[in-house]
Amino acid sequence: MSQPYGIMAAAAATVQQNPTTLAEILDKRVLAVEALGLIVSTTVLVGAAVQWFRRRNRFYLGTILAAIPICFADVWYFATITDQVSTNSHLVIRAICMVLSAGQISALTTMRFGVFQSAGHAQWFTKRVYVAVLVLIYGVTLASTVVLCASYLQQAGQPAFTSHPWRIPALAAELIITIAADLVFTILSFVIVWRIRAEVLSAATKALVKSDTTLNNANNAHPRHAIVSTNIMNTPSGSKDVLASGGSQDTTSTPSATTPAAKKVGPTPPSRGASANDLAQTSGSGSAGGDAARRGSKKPPPKRRRRRRFRLVAGLTLGVIVVMILSSVVGMVLFIAGGGNMFGDTLASLFSRFYILGALAQWALVIEIMHAR
Image 1 (cartoon, helix red, strand yellow):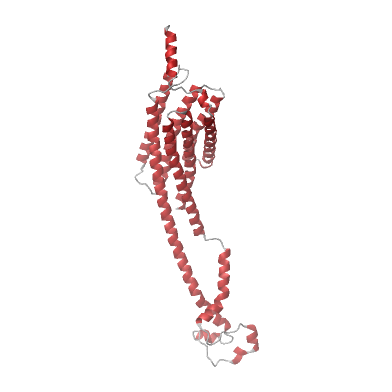
Image 2 (image 1 turned 90 degrees about the vertical axis):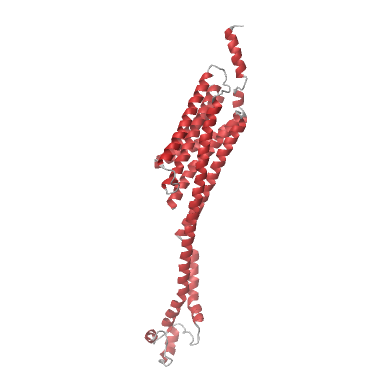
């Protein structure tokens, strides 16, 4: 057996260890997940680009940088199944883009958490801590990318890439650092948003109770004013005497109070033995009904509307954070359980896209919460 033939046979035997073939990439399940992933990643990329052109915020720029590798890997997959590029190139692009995107996602989580520190929360998260975390994340991402590239270069002459002893440690280091940072900062964000929600709603409730108490006191005092005004309006010619005497009328007043003209023009005066409750009911019934109608026709007060809006935004933020945590955990479990299976890895990468989409939504909600305070 000649030496070249022996080398080729050994390489072929090595390839049979765990080759990724085009048939595995063409699996209908993989194709369906990749199609859904392309839709999600394109949505994230377009949404982040639109927001960045409107606001020029660095968070949206970071989201664009996180979405570009994912979109590139999705497009490369469809180029692979149409025989535009080789299977080996798809595996290289897929692995490296996953590492780059994971690092950028973790950096976005760190950046998003810095908003709470600038708003007076998490004072321990100083600029020095912030920079140290980013250096750690980007350092591990760079090292993992270099190791992956070196491992693929060593197998460049093979017809199909097989497992390499460097890849698992490189991917494990990247996933452990980035997912741990994501979970820690995302859980801390959940706790802080919950506290802000409790504080704002408690303060709003106290303000509403105080406002309602003041309003009730004013309404309770209203019948007294109505009694005085009714007595004055019903006093025909002795109104000056009533005011001068503090509201008591002399029983020997002039008989002009009973003249037909007075009876026709003015309202019927209350009887001399009427109680204060009767007067309050008589004078306040019309105004109370009008006030009730006016209150029913008006919209809720601005403070109450703002409180409802804040409750809605805070609830959505907490829900989005829970979805992000679940996406991170489920994606990690699927990646480990897949064991290098194409369908398992593709399904795991889909949850990373959901995580970025949730991060994009959470940023807008957190900013609104900070402004509502």
